[in-house]
Length: 416
Image 1: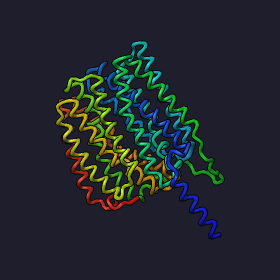
Image 2: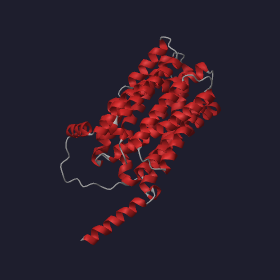
Image 3: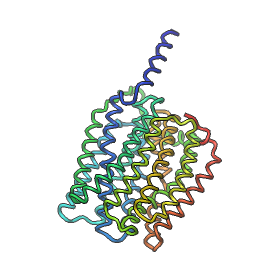
Image 4: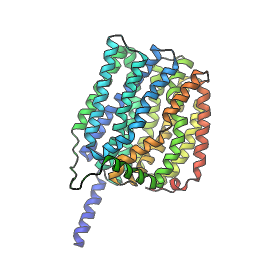
């Protein structure tokens, strides 16, 4: 009996040493993400530049982000429940396919020359609904397909796909807008999302035994909420992220395109340059974390947050596109040193049956202020407050919040 246990342990240890790319299911998930994330960013730069081109009222531009964030926020918890109860592969397939259909509708509006700001805002809201279901499913699939020892590396590779997106997506999108117009950029995005949905279909998950009667969705929700409430690490991270996102999400997402077009007098290629720089910085950060294992992830997180706040403040003083692109690249590199350890911490300390719910709770609560951030930023711009001033003040506040969290021992003392 003892020999059998020893042999089992050796086999398990050997499995943990297997590279993540020997895992066929993970490779398919990775391939799907390679098409899905850049495809979304190709759509995004097209939608952003289209909104800036058809309407001079920058309040509507802010509403583009607000419309996407509200359904995402309201439905993320439901998305987590569904991810824990149903086939995650099917959820991802439906998400990518629905995005492709939405882009097809947008192309139809363009071909009939009937596109308006309202159409773009409604489509953004529909994309937000899709995000609410795809995010928990994607992040709860990774720990199911990989062993715990592979999680940091697997998450880093998945983050690479996410961060290649702001490199390939804007670069491809800006070029296509210049060469083929908006119909061309959206057609390529549609094709990429269709390919992503096809790759997901080939993932094979083990069928779980279903002998016990499943609890109701409400019981699932209560169980997940109680689990999250008792997890001190989750509570610490969520409280910090709740306030940080308010000062970061709105000013950055709305501010960068407006600065490029209105202050630097740039074009779609200029915006693509800035967003590509974002992807390059984030990709380098993801590659770094795929090649090393952090000994003090919590400490790295807090110091990186302080650095992020300082860089964000300085970005508000940018005088041209290239300087802003360099600062943004440094910011997104630093962001990876926050995001990847955070997700890995949560995955390693969470029961696998609860991962979908924990991911959705984290996103729901921590991004609770994001829609408000979009509205407040839009209103401040509408009443005449400069976007650069908004970014500078927000960066200073983020720095102060991060410094305050140097007292948070629960995060600082965490070890993988």
